[in-house]
Image (cartoon, rainbow, N blue to C red; front, side):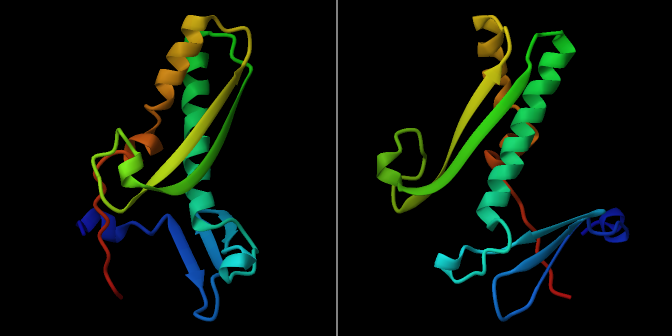
Length: 148
């Protein structure tokens, strides 16, 4: 860990007891809860970790599309992003590099509202893949863990 990183307080802190799945999440001044559904042994007091991941991708996608349209003065009125996560057999995924076992699949549906041209809609759908969270999820990720 670099000196700068070690002197910077963590931006996200997650705390939980060892007797269940419920977690308290602090993101700067914001407070959230996370848990697993009852069917998976949780108490359903908040979204699951995968739900939070999908929310991150969805909000970033919507923000990126809206920002791009605003900068160009395009008549975009609203963006709705619907997402789901599943695990699929790698052999069923033609565009996946992995060919054995299972791979994570995120399905993302984007609905754009406003009097946009076909060309503008096409460009905004292309821009969706440029949101920073999408870029992170589709690139190599290096997670460094240390015990304290």
